[in-house]
Every structure is written in structure tokens, then in C-alpha cells.
Image (cartoon, rainbow, N blue to C red):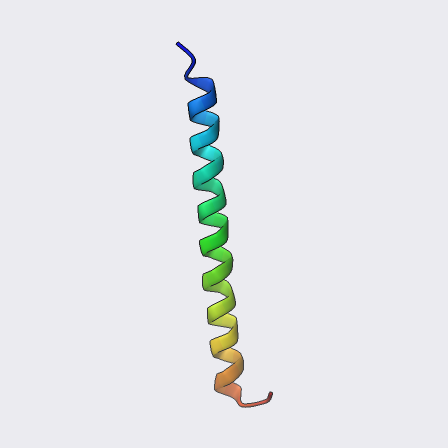
Length: 40
């Protein structure tokens, strides 16, 4: 049974999704704080 490929592919996909979502949330939070200070 070749589970290695499926497991590696699944972990890579989940890891990329988590990294993308984390970066997107961090960007929104950072942008929100920047707008809150009105320093442009």
C-alpha cells in the first residue's frame, strides 16, 4: 500500500493552506491596525 504519496501530498496541501490563511489574516490585522492610527 502506497500511503506515503497521499500523506505527503495531503500534509503539503494543508501546510500551504494554513500558511496562506495565516499570512492573509496577519496582513488584514496589520492593515487594520495601520488604518486605525490614520498615519498613512
